[in-house]
Image (tube, rainbow, N blue to C red):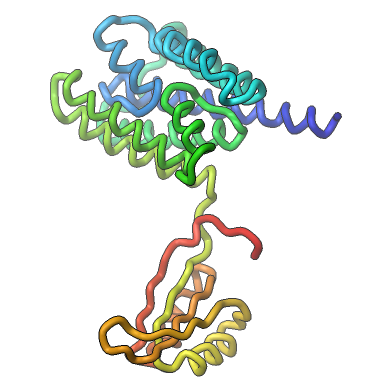
Length: 280
């Protein structure tokens, strides 16, 4: 019981931190520079521009009914944590903008998009990794992710992009939409760093005529005992080639290139991010 309680309290603490960080990104960087974001904050910024209603009030008005209608799909625990996140974000945003009236930290739209987007992404990451949602489209994304193989983060960004495109029709200049798109991209980067962590390893595919010798050199020089060798043939010539797949630290990628160049100058190397690892 104590373990479960501690786990739940930790979740709520992380949601609190994430909500305040997200609200700070909206209040200090986006709203003053007429830049929108994705999700409910973005919708609230657009509506605030027309109506003058507080950003927090608009977020509550949009989110609470949506959460209540979706409770049977997302579960009570998830719903309660989501409601807590929504309330924290709304109250923090109104506290910063309406009550304390903090000035904008920058009047430069580029800086507003960069730092606003990153703060929102970091805040989202804390909330989502704590089994909650900041509301709005992310509730829809969470439901779709549970039923499909799509990643929740990718779905959120797709829905957010649609909201941001609306900024081009709302704000007086097209610049606002372009800055907003930059902000959404940086939000995705901040979100992925918190959820997946910064990739510290690379997945490397090596196509070689001398796969066995290359494998021996890699193990000898890198001390790498993992990896797989697959035998196959090229599409056009039908020549037999080996395909090596291995995971290495970022710092060893250059060494792999040098080993392949020395052992097989015709070898082909493809390097990819290993952003989610399990079982190693």
